[in-house]
Image (cartoon, rainbow, N blue to C red; front, side, top):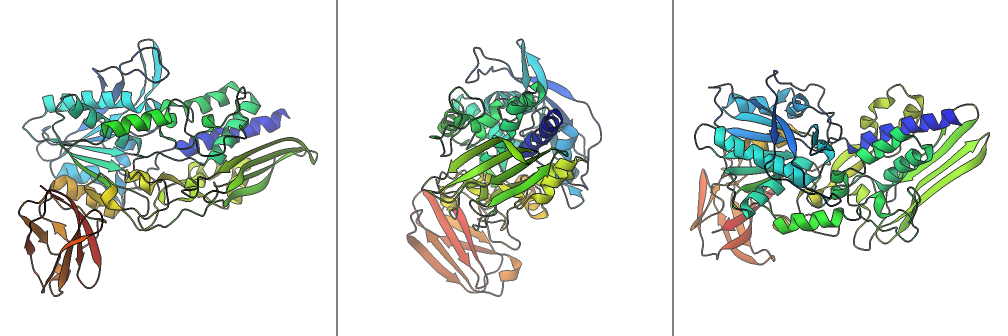
Length: 548
């Protein structure tokens, strides 16, 4: 039995690391030249929900100056995301901006921008050991505030900052910028780019969480339990995960499910508290807030509710095998067994473990929702030579799951994770939204172009999807005239423009005959948010428009 449990320990440990891995670095990634790593300490301490005192957060950063004059005058901060154990260093964060043999950071540096990579390391402060990559989002935000203030003090000229926050980094950036405005601290920041960030929560299939925790606890190995504590039970995980195993445990047990707790539940004392705090802060008011996401905006799902992830028998040795079956959470209002484990010794069951999940009546289970995806097989690295893992991967029936639901990355508060997003409900003013679900925090040529356009031109329009040959509002917010740049491929087509209220009422409409260059449209709209729809006879585009 000892060999069996050791093998299960290996299996569970790798699963655990697999699911929280925030991004894969492309195979053809471009890494930076080595420079100097500096340390920065927050000047504002933060006390976590379960802490008895406040601690000053720390970070490490590198400044990669531009390739034109080598002067720090146009800083762009790129943040770290969820990375317990600091397995992804500054060089890796830089490389993660690669796409198609290019690197967005290199492109920007060639255009005179300076790239500042801010990493969350392991450190000790006030006698407490802190794992920055899994620490409280709020404490990491205080580190970012110090970084922003330092850059604004050190930079040459008056160029305002740009902050790019991938994954959890987007929450850190949002919190920091909003906190600064609320507390009369000028961030001197013109643009905030959220990159597939979980503004309404993140998801790891609860079936996998149960499995990881069961193996760790049943093995009784200290190292395995530390893995669970460091990753799944880190402060950041407990703040972000929509459904967390700690919300389901039977009183007095560290692995058994309370049969009365089958609906999605966040980590007690963390999840609801954090979301309420984030909602109260809102978004920065004096910064342009845009988002690029990896989840589909057209309703494309990741598998289907209740689908079987794996149902297999894993042979451990000549005497021992284990039956493992995992499923996605079910359709709305339905209940299913999501985790089912049976340990067999000489063909006889000697241990069983089952957990149950029920979906709310407002939405199918989030595991299969549109969203930036996590991949079991990619994270397991093809098994790493471990035959049990290889057999498990080969048996997978559903590899991908929704890690950052589309609704969450758009910061839309809708209880139905599968609804078609109404962009008027999103606080962002510009969006990159793909038509297919992409790997979480994957940079593509299209999303890179979106980010580059936003960084280069802070006043470009607010489009539902960043498409080639799109219409663009020359100014947004608009004043007396609505000015619309016309793409070249539309110059021979008639264009119908319509303005709708947020509630869907059509307020204005006009058809333009073969417009060229720019459309200027007078209006008498009151201040507020509207939807501008454009139809060139070939396609339709929607732009969220702000009238001052």
